Length: 164
Length: 442
Image (cartoon, rainbow over all chains, first blue to last red; front, side):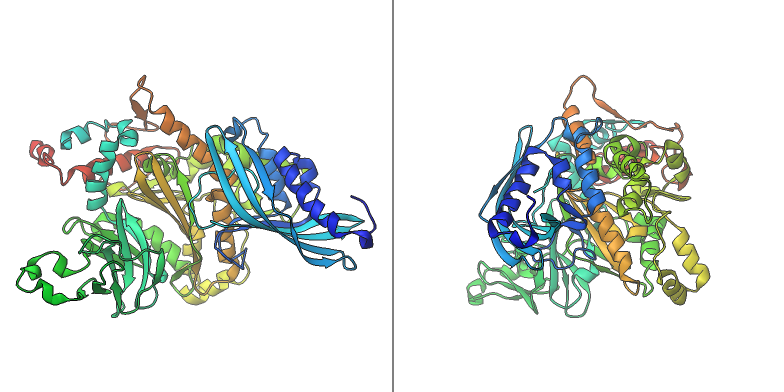
């Protein structure tokens, strides 16, 4: 999407959230990494309503380097936990747009999702709320931050290998 | 199964696969091993005020750690003496001056003593006062709080705390001495990671120095490659500090050294470790010098032990204030809880580093965790093979190894795994029929 910043509409913002989930489901990670601003972090809190990602343990709090490492690792010759590979699937409720400031180029969405991840005979279902903090840069929407709050963040999990 | 059957499962440099797969052995571990040893319960900062409690398990036994009105910490079986209902249902909370059973309102002081029963007249002249139920919530056999860490022995009598842990307590000392105020505080809830494998595989992996560069090549090796492709930017990304050292060559791990102590305890990283090259945090060393004096502060910081195994089922990582609790849930099921602690009086960057390590290495979402769990689960499945019945723990073994003596060896030895099995046999059999036969024979 390349439009004038002031031309970004509510529909553009909502489409962006759907497109991002589709990239993850289809494993289009190069395109997905390109959505991120350099200082962006992907945060998945460990504690329900956790406010501090840094001084308490989170499930994920990943910078660009970690995200690149995570997705490049998936295709490694010696990535044994991905032999065979996992697959994932997001089902989205229509995003709420909580902040819509085209003049500032800033948009925040809140989206409820069901996330399914499968490998071999295992399949897990996670219910989550994703908050996307988006910016318009050179007419395109980019991710400044994404927070994924799992409904059952305090449960014990086996491997979650892809990105909810 | 008697003591000689148990002893036959460990023959020096090999261990029988039944110790990982057999439901019968698992039940015996719960009844004997986790009863006779000192097992980690929690940290005292999880229950700072009177009435504060925290629920967990010792082996398969549900217990409550609670702060009594006099400030002491008690560990009680989480079971109403009346009908068996768990008294504390949630993971933590404050119960005030007493526990009250949600089923029939029997109530108990926070040291477990029976406080009141509704319609108590109904028990008059029944001999009730002579029953176990009249004594209230049953305490475990013994409790010891060491520098904030709460351990319990389920058995009423047995080995003492100091004798059981001996000099291995130096790793906990080093972790606590790293706090300018000399104490730790829990920082948030633990990561909870479910493993479909036997709990001992996880404990053995803590001192397995021949796996990181192999099993973690996918994560650490990829990190190193990406960093090079980026032209090695400075300051290096945090992942390079935390994950990349896993790719250190065999020689590095050989030099790191392994120390073993009697009763199954031991640690990697005698001379240095993968935790030795972290960036210094401004203001921290100064605060430590102020607390300890420069000489002791330097000695505390120069000790960079990697993983210390406290037999049977925890690991402490002193330089990062971490504790991992490998809680057995079945022969092929283990819950791993990974805690981080804040060094009281130290800059916040320290606990940020601990939390970063925890999420990068120990989380169910961690790529390093994925590498390891894949190996454990493959081993758990592979061990069902009847083609071979023994697991090999022979690296750098010599026949006259004496696990009653502290030893320091090449960092790639599997001596610590053998040391754990020696202790495993000892504490499995000490309360079994036939346990005296070997002693008598000697």
